[in-house]
Image 1 (cartoon, rainbow, N blue to C red):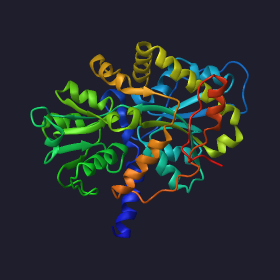
Image 2 (spheres, rainbow, N blue to C red):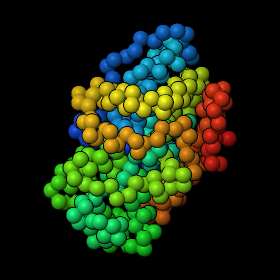
Image 3 (cartoon, rainbow, N blue to C red):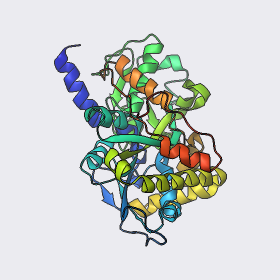
Image 4 (tube, rainbow, N blue to C red):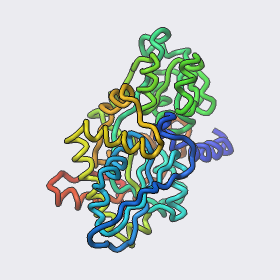
Length: 369
């Protein structure tokens, strides 16, 4: 591949990388790349930690339910005590990474592709992944009148959220393993890969412009409500059916200056995930209530009831799957081999887990020294 093309792809990938997490890309969850401050700032009580505030970034998406529920239920704020949680929502990964780089947020929930790109772009100097949040929640859904088996995808038009995003890379890798050929940049080949923003994918499907989509939740369940059929759950392609879809990141500066705040925040996420997994129906309702608070409209019961069970909430960042996702992007020609050593710092999380009597998690050899 010519150097100019690789440069263009790298730039395009940085802009595209966040779309795997545009799972709130239904009209009910809001669109655009502008940050939105949550006007409701919880009055902090208790002992203040080393920072007055912690500025949190997350998406109004179901795969960010650890943030949605932790914020809605006050679990994160309770662990922070007198340090005030100040949330801001984003609808695109690059804008959240830019906010972290500009010192506008301190901690964020984000997908693997923007985390990788954010780390590589700054040569490992700004962010660290400090924990996991969610796994799964991605499906291949198709028009059952046109596609009945996986082999029927050949010659069809299948949407992914954007060039180089996590779902796009996963689909290109799946196509390659089938022995089919597709030009990664144009999407043309044995299957037509049509890069379509999640917010318009349902209309594209209804109009017949695409025959299916490899997309995250709740877009997948929205398509099913419009008559599509789930042909493949991406979880079935991964060992133990687990792969990272949402991580927790922090600026290295904030981690160094306020380790007590980071540790308290992680106690909050661990307790939130524990509550979500122990109370799935209440957690689903809590996440939807927060979505309604942020966007003015909740997800319909038919959509959220179908979407919720496919997402697993976990403290484990599933580091081996992040490495694999990066390798898939390299294999597709969308990314030069990245240097990911040091992208994780799981010491604070493992301290929290050990104190809680939970098993520690691995950084797969990619931890900070």
